[in-house]
Image 1: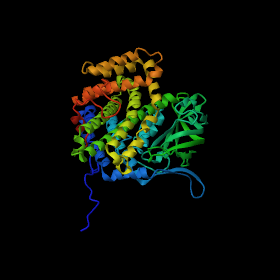
Image 2: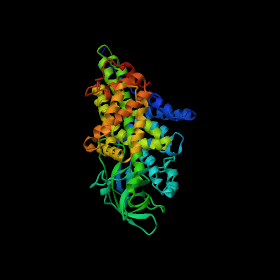
Image 3: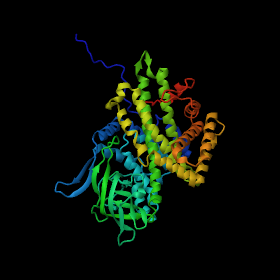
Image 4: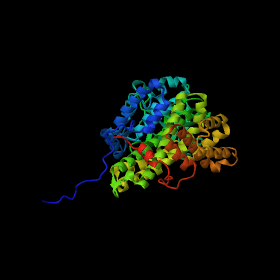
Length: 544
């Protein structure tokens, strides 16, 4: 009898067929913490349904298909007419439709809307981060449009609809719409005040004709876009519909799609306006002030997206280690691997806990909470998004060579991981935004200090970090050169305070010892061995 050479043993089963939401203890605890008891059963049921879908083999396959078949640009039809359309794989449309029907664009008009949406967005990122871009832009357009009550009344019901209508037709004929955004230009980048796109007023009040070029236009297949352009009164925010009310297509010339490192399923484009019809949002000259509500909301989504990517990376690593045997036992039981996994789990838990706390502040909407968000959002966006790449890379290494192979899914997470740090203002932009708030908005600093001060005296390492941070705040002269240092410490102190307040003692102890107390190396897996690493790693293990 011939001997077989391909008997497969000691391979980890795929992490599939599970509830992504309920398998995440940190996320479920955060939702329970920030949701009113009377709503909790409904919110849990909705999120569990989304979690089961996200963990299903079918949707995981859709995510892979959408990334393996990136969008394509069609500038002209077969007869030579300009159409400027983006074609997506059917799997991408299915995922986007599922995200919209799950309420990921409907936070503004639902009870506990921001917490339930934040948890759902974190779950949905783990299927495919690409379709989360239009979900984010559509959600975030609402606060910007509220600068014009008439526009908000017209567009907000469409933006918050739970119906996905992919056809390009006038918005008033659609049950739901999606939005994109175009702010940056090739000569200015993040310095949007250097924009040169011109807005010329038309006869009808509030309407303009745009001429210019946008270097990055997010979600170019959308029904409408918020853009910045120079009006006679200065930089102004505009709504650009893709299709005009009479059914004709607005002038929206797609020049090319960006060939990106990751986020392959999503389209980002360069677009030209040449006599493009637009409606003003807010006052002339108030463009940055008008669109800042959209920017703040999308920055929170960057935090949520990074937290979701980290969670999936850590879940894959712990799942692998729980099943793979080496050197006489399970990898999860090996002290050194356990240290690595616990260290990664700490980073993921801190990110998720902070992200849901920010979402809860949006739901509260009080003056104190809004002041807290003014500092906490850019600080969190700076720090959490920067932690995503090292977590994804280390998690891939936990799978060994298997983690370097596309079929594992880890390379897709690694490619995606730098994205949220770059989008909606890269690291220096976030750090400078924090400095601006520190110098001009004392109520924001007060709200931040109240938040971290809730646990003063609970952990000596956290107390020491707070003291050092106050010393940094006391010297604002020449602070720009050390802005990253200050913002990093702010984010770590805030994460530490939240974990001391809400996480199990072993998690808070490990975070404070390593991130705040300095008992940590320069790579993951260097936690003090005296900590309860087994409990920390086990807490991060997804239950299948």
